[in-house]
Image (cartoon, rainbow, N blue to C red; front, side):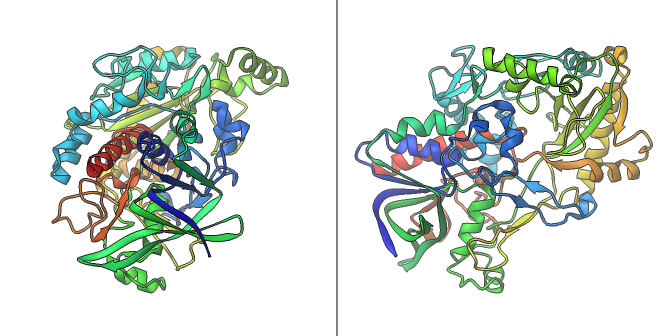
Length: 541
């Protein structure tokens, strides 16, 4: 076993949070940082072309290739569960949508943790600090930061008609989803720079990698944390990992920062003996710290993908049905970095209420001028659009658990979708609202015809069945190492992201969220990492 040396901080995971932390911590020249990433460098061409997510997801070069356990709420189906395995993590393979969520999300975190530092008014400056918004600096947006936010470089008549139909159904038009209340319908803003994906590896890690106080090791798989007994509890001293055919250890003289994501972080904690003691013993791992919440509280946004055939509309289905159309698309991107190859997976968004008594919007739409049976399959040959709708505040809770002490075996991911009556009721209401939008006058010209799930699903019982048949993840897992108050038995972390009962160890990624944010989750993880960096810098003073 070789020693990689001593460092002030060891960051496990070169994804969204890890890249931000590497940048912020190495701004102090007196701090030495080791960043360990299991994947490779972000030199795969499809990472950088926005439509290339189709080639990155479910690709071993860039994805962990996780799958869920068969899910009863989805009729026993098992889903692919993409997580980025490359520098930049999921920001290198995701949908590039810039979305913060709602003010009430963060005010709720402050209440659940007892820490006012998580309130919306407190985290808004952190969002602005990172941001380089195309409109420039405003009270809600920042300019000059690393994280570029731009308008999309195309629009579609069919999506504009959907936007008008949404307005006719009571969902007003909006130009900005990121001011604290995201009610409305409009085109998503995206993390791109002139039509090219802008990942956290580009934005944050590349500048940090030029600094002599950052050591970057890729292709290195962390097997476990080095945890020893100490005064008053356990102490994390560093990590054990393999890379290049060698097993390594590295020592953290300050802290180890676990940034492996909502699946990887609880897996590594459990492999290291930190988690529910009984479950660890069954997996053959000796418990070091009995924390029942590690791996619990898994939340995700389940998207219900409704497909409508249309007439007389240009859609991506029809554009790609002929070699000439594909050639035009390729030339447009090669010459101008615009057109369909610059598309985020979803272009138009909408936020609405499933029921009038919801305090803020609890549904999010991702609307696309295309359709396909399932991810990875060819587009349909007929013109169509897809309106995916998510329940933003699911009450179902799943879990992530190791099955053995084998650090190279995938964990067991059990989302438990549609496991509560409330979630099934919201799903039924969401399908009904989508049908009302499709029937609005603004779309009548295109004669939308429901293809999936099908008009024969009518009663609440039938609609709940339909939701289970067409529902799939939209890749937003969070919550599996949640922060909380001392009296919360499932809280893994305190409000400063420190692991309870284990000194020298923090978790910084989507797993820390006590409740899921009301929208796409990448931007909130950047904010979490910004706050973690501030906490670490304050602790050094």
